[in-house]
Length: 68
Image (cartoon, rainbow, N blue to C red):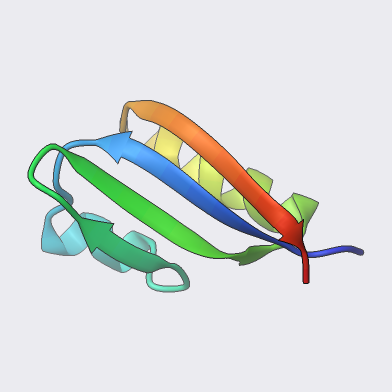
């Protein structure tokens, strides 16, 4: 299955426990937005989005780069 580089932006800064839920992603925090990035296939992307939803985070953007 093809993998792509994704950036997933959510509102707010993530606390330590929430960051741990995304240990498989690069987490970059700005004052009002957190960017989760990594190389994911389709099932991996859905898994990350399920975690975003389960943690009650507000999703604002998903960007996909070209294939690896």
